[in-house]
Image (cartoon, rainbow over all chains, first blue to last red; front, side):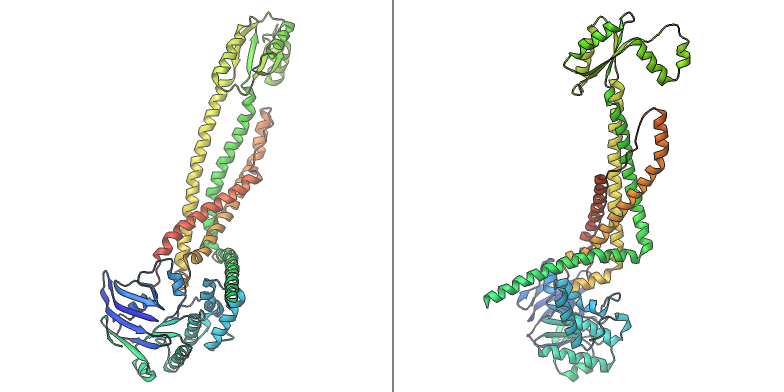
Length: 218
Length: 320
């Protein structure tokens, strides 16, 4: 599903962020990506999200090589991804409904289909009935769940989460992780960057550990 | 199974098209709503644009008015054949009829000494002084309007030479030269107006482009997030292009309004001046089709400015 082969990424002024990283995530697999800050977690996620391109090696997603993907194809490839961020990245001037609907509107779904899928998605994260609220009127945990609803609304093949529980207390974190496990159940591949070692060990999934740009354990 | 699949693909296409239209409609109206949410900035921008547009269109209408004025003068590329003092009215009339036969002449009019005096008295305001004269100092005149085709000087001069051959004719005068000069001045003026309008058009393009650039910066988060959920550049830039369109459209209308108000203010004194010259000069306003053209030009310029900025900046804006 997600394959890294001898991937290196060098930034012109910051040096090498990733060195010879290889791993493979299967369909429906859930894995954690850990490491200290600066170990290259963000860089690795950026390569998958096509926000950066690697200097050497190759990255492929669902059998398609995205290493040197053309600018024009990136939007269409990104529709296979569900991205979740530590700071939620919600549009605060739009309602919960509009936030969750964005990936569908972008892909050109009609009104009824958008409404149906947004409700289904909000139902999955337990926020049905809050469609008309604005993000800032919600708690942190609820905002993150809006972010998750937005990530899954397009039925992505791969969910990438960057420190999704970074701003949440342990109870809410566990709740969010439980949700990810449910997505895994229905065949979605999930990759979560986190340094909440306790939680990671408790859940017992595959762990990819980065240290100074090297993959030291997978 | 296969047919079902094809049917599904077809309905997805229809769905995409419907969503596309809806997206455009949404862009059209939401961008208008967005402009109204930052009224101060929007009004400032629109006023600057409207002033530029009203300047360009005012120059245009001034030239159009003067051209209309010189257009009236076109009939005065006529020739005046002044006859010798001893030629009788009957002989003059006969000569006029003879000239009428000439193929390169459209109209011939004989003005007797007496008529000339009456006309002069009526129009010059010197009637008292003229009454004091013992005899009529004015010669008989034959006014000849050459064919419009005779626009080049050679033909006119040839005709002039022909008329000079008549023994009855004292001398021939053509009003061509100063008309030609005036027309050249008008040509320079309209070229100048074109150049100034071109500059003002660039100004409209750049001002809109810059406004859109600021708007894009204000909405950076939205752009990033849209990019990350798989929005194409076309999708992201659509509402901004509509903002540009509205800026141009509204400014075009406002520019027209400013110019029309200026013309209305000038109309009365211009008409007064015109009556002082015994002329029936009507101030020319922008016609309906010119008005539509103005709206179209200002909208297009604004959209082009927005597009250029978006085309460049959207590639620069990379989500972090």
